[in-house]
Image (tube, rainbow, N blue to C red):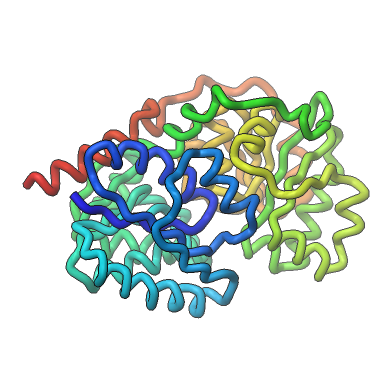
Length: 351
């Protein structure tokens, strides 16, 4: 079986790491890095730490508007698909790289496989939600991380075949845990809150960004804040950079091993990232999500995740009130999702 895998952003590197490891045991994989994330600490370091093979193609698309970025990827991806003639194109998650790969594969002979299908936040103003919906309705094989995601796909009556595999990010997290050092390498406090902010809805709106900053500043425990390049640009552009530096422990972006180590050492995480919400859940850390909606609704229903939006008061209240959490349900599999992904691919192509 010949598979062409498309990745381009941090969460996709984490997901692809476990799938590539399983896939390459018996099959041929061509790996394409679109270059959507190009900062070394958001890209290259992930390949090094997670043992991801060197990309066969690096499109180096860089930063641009959604339309220009997606179109640029599609032009290059179409040529690669024509040259490589894979049996399947595998896309992950919900980024512009996902959408570009999906649209190219949907109009070409290879089957389209979506890993992490069926997630919905219900917020169609969110670019990631548009990417999810379009990709799912283009896909031939939809691999859902949970039974809830499968039910969503069934309600939407998608044309492709649906299977539940579990979450491949959990596989990678388990694989990496024995390599963890400690957050002490970054001289963090003994007790701290870990915060990440990068969603365009939060960074591009000065009022939302200021409210989030105000909430984090008012938390009683120190807040360690790895700053995404987009967030730094926004903080500087909105005149909030110096205020943030005064009250938060701001650090440069970090690689996956360091980030997981920071997360393990934190008492709580405040984030607008879908991937970090799951990583907090897997590492038994309470999560405060800086959004009004989430695609990982099961974590909220289970009592491990609280949606607070950009409300400074709710941010402070939710972080300060973190206490004993309810029993944690098994929502996304036991860490063997990558094997199930490959099993589903093999089953389809055997047929």
